[in-house]
View 1 (cartoon, rainbow, N blue to C red):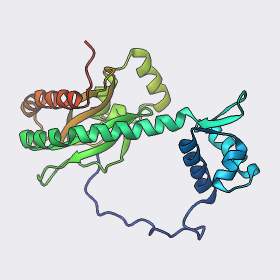
View 2 (view 1 turned 45 degrees about the horizontal axis):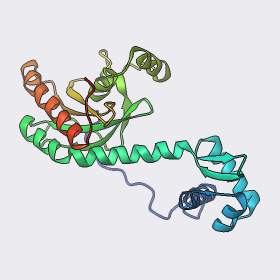
View 3 (view 1 turned 135 degrees about the horizontal axis):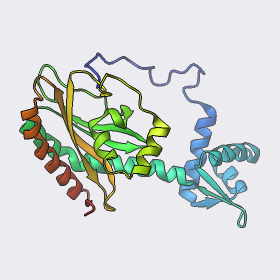
View 4 (view 1 turned 180 degrees about the horizontal axis):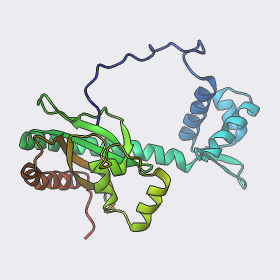
Length: 248
């Protein structure tokens, strides 16, 4: 968990070390992806004409996109299409938007019931990514910047998601991500406590979680016992609003 800090100003829009404000190769690659998305499928020549670039340049960009799974080439038809990785990235965005929209009012109600900060995070490539937050007005509070990515084993939501995985899935995750020790108890921040529960999609898969976090001076054992069923109920409400279900 991060403390509250003043926001640093990023590079102004339009400013770039390359002088033009964009990276040309990335700009062209995204043009090609957009063209493929609109056309569904296209030959190299058709794409070259569509984006106004030489066929040799388009081919190099398509090969790079294919290497990363964002485009596919079909030998029989000689057509290029959008790759599965583009679908995964797009699905992650839709999943995030769906969870955030469904959870908005539930999170506010949970804040009112518990008096502590409420977070929603999604699972992404073995990490948890925080996508929505409702902050308490208490002077000492848990805080995550939206978009913060963290290890599952050091997060309440991450632990809730790992609890829904098979033994093999957990082992593979730990091999890939490791178990970095942030504090003596492997939690992210000393002196903070979190209660979390998983959120499920329509297939009964745990894809996100909702949590209540606060300092240990307020999150006593008795308070955790009071908060826990409220967090479970909030997770169940968000799951239902998303059209999800928990496997029996």
